[in-house]
Length: 171
Image (cartoon, rainbow, N blue to C red; front, side, top):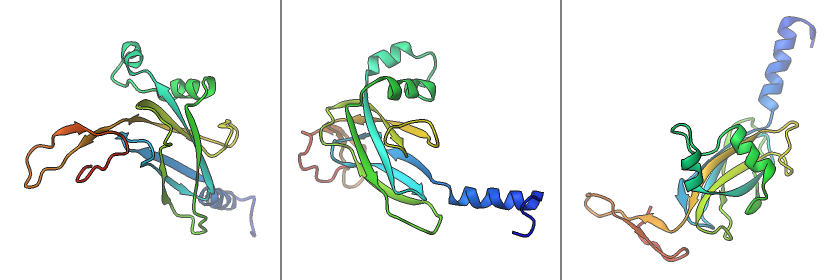
């Protein structure tokens, strides 16, 4: 306050703005059924995050890949978000907090998603625009594949069950 134009004063303003700035990231289960709590949003200083799911063609991704990273990232993911209509769009309301710390909120995948591979993209803005915003995304497989735990150890067999069926002791 006393010397706002000094290097120390400018640095303090930068620190305050960084602490107060909205921030978020997402993580998701690699494979899950629609309607399941699959997306974790880590956030601070933000009231809501908007999500979209874009279907991906796995075979085309593998054929077009030039390295070991087959899922769209960076520019490729942005082209999908800007150039295609999503298969689903939803929002995740976030708890209001005033402590400037990271918090985690979970979002369900929409019930309407058909089995397949998706790019799930998140934005702080509903229009997914660039100004004052960042886009993040993760690849998610929606399907009925499940892993069954055996009592007493051993290998975990892989099976399938109809989406929405009781799953018992599964992960």
